[in-house]
Image 1 (cartoon, rainbow, N blue to C red):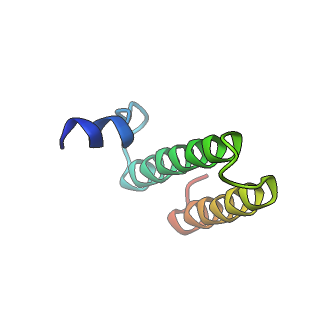
Image 2 (cartoon, rainbow, N blue to C red):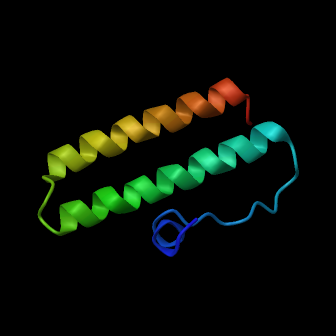
Length: 74
């Protein structure tokens, strides 16, 4: 990847117990945190209302919960 992508979409290595579903969930969790960070920054900068930020975060949370159940991660 180029430097901009590395900066915007930085992923930390996974150090936990290796199971495919754990690795997939970890990637989804990192994507979740990255998107939450963007939403918080937009809201702090006045580009997003608190209500819209809440709605987006709530939607992302539901997606993450669904992914956890789908992958059967305890």
